[in-house]
Amino acid sequence: MALERRGNRYYFYEKKRIGNRVVSIYSGGGEMAWIRQILNQDRQDEARLEGEKKNRSFEAEKLRQNEIDQLIESTCEDAKAFEDALFLTNGYHTHERQWRRKRNGQKLETKRN
Amino acid sequence: MDKNSKRSEIDEVKALVKKTDKENPKPEDLELRKYLDRDSWLVEANNVSQHAINRVIGYYASSSALLKELLERQVEEKRKAMDYKAANVFVRMLIDQVILNNIRLNQLEALHVSKLEGSHSTEQGYYWDKRLSSAQRRFTRACETLAKVKKLLSEAELKDQQARNKRSQSTLTSQKLYKMLSD
Image (cartoon, rainbow over all chains, first blue to last red; front, side):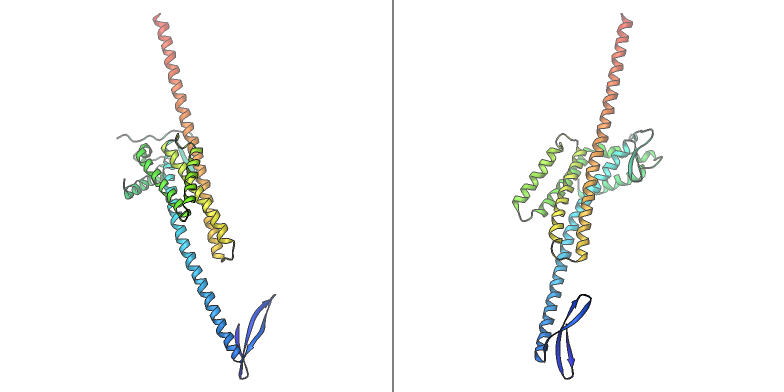
């Protein structure tokens, strides 16, 4: 949307996309054009603030979600450490991120103190 | 056990797993079993899972006591269905993992629907999709781990039983032989 000058007068045109063309729609001239321009500016500012507010709430939501996921991820990691230890002590080894039993299937011996 | 010492123990286990998961591990690295034998530690790990479950429920049902109660009951039901009480500490920890991931997955499925039903940015769409897929992946992994560990433990139990049977069989045979010789 724009305020356009034709000779000594100002005119306000709304821009609209129709199909693949942008058309200008006349919506006021002279003082009315200025009023339309101010109203349009206000509407744009409002939309921008609304967008920023939405972004801020999305960021806060992201933080909350990340916190929960990190908590879950860390408990899963702890459990995985014990799972790995269990498989290793039962004669398994990893092959391409899969647990496979060793051919002789021997259990690992613990060092005796 | 304080949080830091627990963390350092987990790191120790992880380091040992790395050192041991190779062709010929050094004998001094083969100390993994001692960690698994430490039930008290596993109990502590279970407490951490319980804490995580409480946090997730707390977040999900922060504004509704009814929803909180329902979720807590669901957790109990799921535990009962998975034979929680009869399971050993290790399996209990894994059952808690499955339940925790299940609650989180349900939560994210609901959030995914509610956040993406109206107008939203591409960034938001990607974000919720990513969250949901990682929750699905975690849940699947937890279920697989529980199944694998249960299978492994039942195999080990079967082997132990077979060995016990064999021993008692040979004792019986030697007793019979002794009786025959003494008669």
